Image (tube, rainbow, N blue to C red; front, side, top):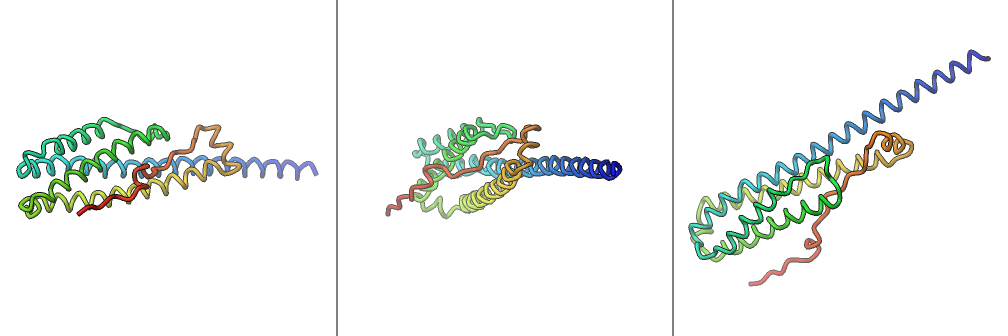
Length: 194
């Protein structure tokens, strides 16, 4: 009878070790998925940031007296490049600051495109059209990257909150990560005027 108890204890220990191994490595894998998804978000924002100087210079030649708008775009780009958020620093506060800076760029670009509407020659300019198309494509890529990031964060957050894995997550410092949430201004419909 004593032999069966030792076999049962050994089986429980082996099963427990396997569970620890599998759960911990699962957390590591999902954490890396979140980091990869965040890197894609940053890559798309960098792409947009890289397009801005070309777009501003193209508009500058046609709309020299729209200096305030052009400076606003340049300032927003400078502000967004000064906000560095690594995946290890993802907190709700840091994420909100990052999103606010990105919203500033999006808003400034919107004003720039409104200025461009006033100049038919600019709208017909091939460089401007190509840059505008690239910017539109980049905005779509940003949206997809943010969505993929949120999917990775959801999987990770669910895993670190499930019982009994939550115990192991707490022991090894696997904490929940914040989602990429919509900016508060996005809740209001834009005003379209003709």
